[in-house]
Length: 231
Image 1: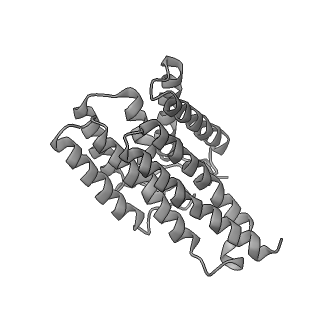
Image 2 (image 1 turned 120 degrees about the vertical axis):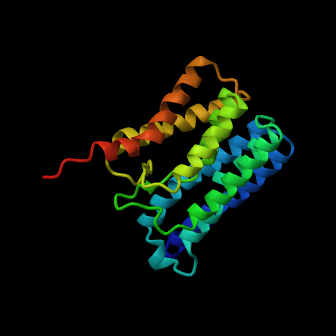
């Protein structure tokens, strides 16, 4: 296999995320929330492996006719933002005007964040919450907090997109990666099982989902509070 074919194959793999997004959206329209999240998790898995493959096979050199960053952002907006926002709106967790406020805040704020050239930090973390609403909404589906609490979470997290707070990238942030990457994989397993059992996974999985979510949400901020020691 030539380097050009390998690089093109990575782009094709990334593009499958659009198919999984459509399958998730079709499930969401039918209120099949478990099936929707299973498709979103497949897209999440693809998003987790296509970046390292793109760097390994040097897609910018061998398949420069396709903009992998743009392709990835388009699919991420669908799977991380648009479909989870729709699910939150249609799920019944946010009645009346609270649902409208939430989807407007999520979609508008995330669109601006995805277009912000300052979203990445020097250590390949994210500056501000990286718009991973798929991760937030699955936890809300499992826990089902009061709608006022959900609305508050939506507003606070959206506001955090436009702050200097750091949020880790599970693969690319090198510091604490030996903890962060397994934690992200564990989160994916807990979320997948939660969706498989119709968001009623039991206390052990709920605890695991809460612990891993808390770590992924706060690890970058902890790095800012406790900066790495320089030689």
